[in-house]
Structures are given as structure tokens and as C-alpha cells.
Length: 599
Image (cartoon, rainbow, N blue to C red; front, top):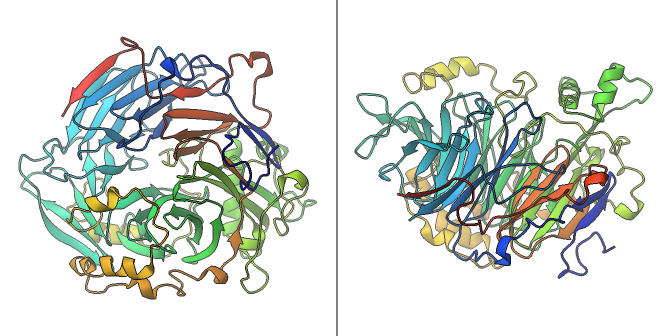
């Protein structure tokens, strides 16, 4: 078996790897893997993205999968580790002309076996609402591109809402829409609602309510991704200017910021309890930021190129009592800590218990992963010795060699390899609306309701305030850069970013002066994590990483979605069918319900 560090046999594609939990194995034995054996030409194509939803059908096989590749969009029943998928029979297939799908998101709140609401963003700026089960297209937003002409970079339903959704564009703007409202026949006019450091929010001026409800302008450069906190109250955004900005979503207040070591930030995710945020980007690093303390607490170095996706593994996040003899839960709670979806509530209650006191009654080890343009998958453990150092910050190493990982890393509180806690019970980075809003992040503003009513008066009837980013400046040259900028200096960043910040706020931050400050600590000032594993798992850059209960799902730009079975999850008697490598680049003519669309 190859070394776990990823430095050897770099040209070999790995099909399995070992962590302290056991062996993860790629399920790759299927005749459906690559129809026609024609490699997908990814040049000029938008990243492959994957979205999941569970429709809770009677068969017990309720998982549904949506993915885009090139001009095509597919919708399948996802059978995971159970059996092979029949790729010749998609539930829905759509081919678009003149534009390409770039991102998508299911509404988990309204999904049923008969109907699902799927938002799809496009390279030309439009957003489409479709129902792939009914094979219907209900609405098209920004159809005439009067709101924004740039590529959609991220689209998500607002947690807990059946009608509100957020859309970010490569122009740097973000907009809030309501599916019940129409877009105007002329370009919208805006009036300032609120302004703060490096951001401004505007409402749409019109005699009748129309989309967009709100437009946010944040910082400098494209907004690459955003993510809601597990309770839906906060929004984390990462931009091409290298900044993470975290907002209180209801009161439209800036909670905190962080600056990348250099270059843009490309991806962001929340820990299951909302206490930590992880980002990745063009500095090849993963950065862990504390929501409570608003500071960088660790960086991780393992990738050799840009980090494209980061995600927490809620099923391997471990929670234990600090005194094993003083277990303060029921026997059922103890079982939930190890098996089943119900363990989410058990872990969440323990995380909340920890948040409510300074005595640290429980010990937590967070597991998160990252994939990058270097085609490598890295897994990381965030342990107690990093979260709560007992001495001044040092260049601590938390690398665990899986060959002798019979005990947890020092300071992790005796992490049980089998304990899999979770507060998010659906896949992906999007937070499902049914999440218990009481199990939340700590927040500084306790009067959200009051501030929300004053700030959002007349803006949105539902009371959930919203968000958008940057100046009305086309940054196309940013998005066509293909080379890895290893000579990207802080001086270059500052020279490009300083002027346009004046369009947003009277104060500006010179990125060249942030190094060595709490916004961007020097490398020697924070602990440096090393990955538990670092494996080359694809030939093309990786674009998807999703943690499910019984598997890990990855995808690369070559056009394959791969399922990695968790330890003990491979169904031995069905190994001939336990395959889940989806080929995205081809589909037999006439297969399924094929729809062609032209904007």
C-alpha cells in the first residue's frame, strides 16, 4: 500500500485508503461506469457539480442525484453502496444550447417522491427552477440578463424557506429571489438599505414587488461560494479578493472576516455545530477559522495546487465525555453515538452541552476533507490540542500515521474510532431546512429580531433578510486564468483591489498590510495541520466532495462521480453490483426523458 502522505507514486490512481476507522474502498466494478469509453473534453467547461436530495419514498431508496457536465444535466436514482445504477435510464436529462449549467441545489423542505424543486444556475447568468420528476420547467429568472450578465457561481435555497433563494455571480454580486415573484422587463433600480465595512445592501425600487428582493455588494472581486450556518442564521462568503466574510443573515451585520495567505478563496464550509469554518483556495491551504473568537486557529498544508472543495464529515466527527466513567446519557444515546442517523441529535446535544460551559465536559474531534486541482483527496482531523492549546500557539503537528494509528492524536480526549456524531443528516454543503434551530452557533447579537425588523422594514415580507456581493464590474479576466499563480504576491493583490473598495465603503483594507495581523496570521503563528491521508484519486481536477452516511462521494472534471464505501459498508454478497461510478459525459441516444433547452 502506498504511503499515506501522497508524496510517492503520484501517478497512480488510488482505489482505497485507510484511516483509523478502517478501509475506505472505491466501488468501481460496473459496466455502467463509462458508456462508449469516450473521455469527456473538459476544456472550457464549467466544473462538474453534484446535488443530492432524499424524497422519502416507500421503497426505502429515496436518494436522488443531480449532476451537470458540459451542456448536460442529469437526474438519477442514487443507489450508493447498495447496487449499481442503470445509467441508461435517467429520470430526467436536459441538454442546453447557448449556455451551460454551473451549479444547482434542491429544496429539501418541499421534496417528495412525486415532486422536487431544483434550482439550476447557468454560465450566462440565468437561474432556472425545474422539477426533474415531473419533467417540468416552472420558471426562469434573469431570463433577459437584465439583473446580471455574468456566470452564476453559487445558488442555494434559504434554509427553512420554500420560496427564497440566493444567487451569487462571478461579477461579485449576490441577489435574493422569491420564486413567487417575477423579474421586471427593465433593468432594476436600487436604493441603499444598509452599508458597512466592505459591503452594502440595496433594495429593488419598484411600484410592485419584483425580483431581486435584495442585492448585496461585498468586497472586491467575484464571490466564489457561500454557505449557510447549520442553524441558517449566518452566512459565510468567500471571494476572489481572498476574504472570508461572515454575516448575520437576519440583521445584515458583519460578524467577522479573515484573509487568505494569498490569492482568492474558492470554497467554504461550516462545522456541524457551527463553531468553525474551513476555507480553501489559491494558496493551496485549508484554513480553520473560529466563529466564536473570529480568528484563524489552524492551517492545513497537503495540497499542491488550488483547493476547490472543503467539507466536514459529520458522520466521523467524534464526541466523547471527558471522563469515560461519567457517561451522562442513556444507553440509547450511547448507541446513537455509534450507529444510525439518530446519532445526529445525540452529537448535537453534546456539542451544545459543550458550548454552554467553559469546563469542556466533552471532547470533540472534527473530521473534514478537501479536494483540489492537484487531483488529490485529503482528510484532516481537528483535535482538542489545536482547538484548545494548553500553551502559546506553536507549530503543532497533528498528522496521524494510519499505519500505527491505534490511538487518537494527543489531546483529542481519547477519540473513539467508531463514534460518528453529526448534526447534518443530508449530504452536501447546503443546510437542510429541518435542522433544529435551537442547536446553534453562539452569536454575539441576541436582539436579532429587533434589528431585523428595523433593517428589513419593507424589504421582505418573510423577515429573512438577504445577501449579494461586489461592484458592478465585470471580472472576466479573473475567471479565465488557468495557470496556478505560485508567484502571486500580496503586492499584486493589493494593487488590484484597493481602488474598487471605495465603491463599496469609505474604508479599505490593504491586503499587503494584513499579513501578520489577526486577519491573516503568519504561518509560524498558528498550528500547521498535516493530512491524515492525501491520495491522488483522479486524472483531472476534483470538483466535488460530499460526505454521506455510508460513503464519500467525489467527482472530477473528467466526468466521473465516484462512491467510496466507508469501512464495513460494502455489501459483500452483492459485490458484483456494488458499483457507483457514474459517467457524466455521454448518454445513449433516446435514454430517459431528454430535454433540449435554448436560452
